[in-house]
Image (cartoon, rainbow, N blue to C red):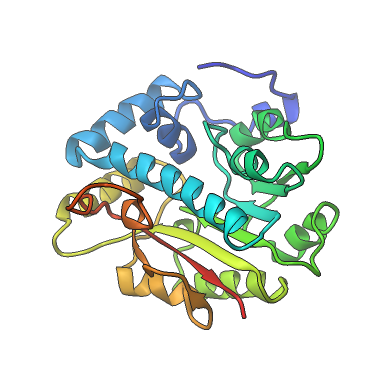
Length: 271
């Protein structure tokens, strides 16, 4: 693993004897910020569900397409990215600031290994700003208080929640957290959300999730595509709606749409 300099107060929080979702995701994406325990678990999950690596890629590419659309078509210049994960190619600030250098981005995560790498998320165009907050999704008040130091919360913000509400097991709490975050943002703001799904025609996904929840951390919750769509209730859902991430405005892909992955997502506007 490409070890950063990890402060002592963080090092004791990093478990190298137990696989962790952010590091496994990084492994599937071809990154180096993972340990043998993560690689072993990632390979076991891939054996149960060979297409799992495609989910990671689909989710990452969905992020890029969504951010590009929000910058170029919707005029968004502010992004609140919660559940950031380990830095990779084309992070939110890189995509946004390539198109609009004045864009401002606040990243939020409470994973110590992500925090240890946060310096990679704080480099951006000098015309804009990037910031990082070590905080849990559930602490909405603290997140918004900190975000207000970088973002102008009287102007539209894109709230990005990729693969993060899967770690909130209670449906009422999960929907409530997303609603509270959106309530703190002004009209014209957008929600970008993705979520692992369960569906009868994807039984291998259920097996992979069951393995993960037995051996890894943090535990995750699958929801049906219909349940994922509920996160967008009350918003103006952009076409094509809540779909497999690789089918959200994929561009020129030929006559046939790409095969679905069990990671669904959507983008919607707050009126």
